Length: 108
Image (cartoon, rainbow, N blue to C red; front, side):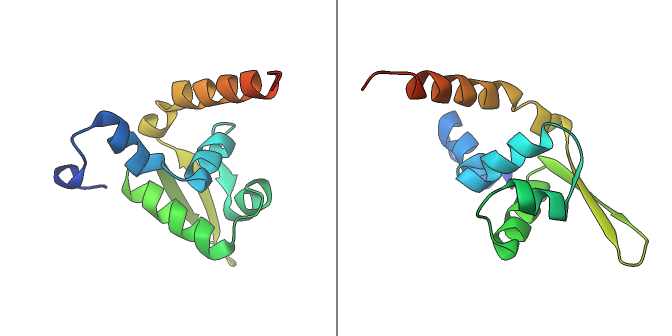
């Protein structure tokens, strides 16, 4: 989990430290619909490399936003799910979606 002593004083900056890149937000978006396997996330998070997906999933697991469950099968099956903390970000995702929709509908 992210060390709270190393987090910024500003709450907005703290949030951005945890989900401040597009990949993490898109992973949250896709896990909002339920548990997914690595391959499923690789397909739905368009443009992400396997290395970047692995790195982001590990970081989000360390931060307590998601859980990783490994099944003792051959080949191993790994599933990712949002934790309660990760689910608490739904209002942020909703606000981002609403703002994006309104922006796209604007006459520029």
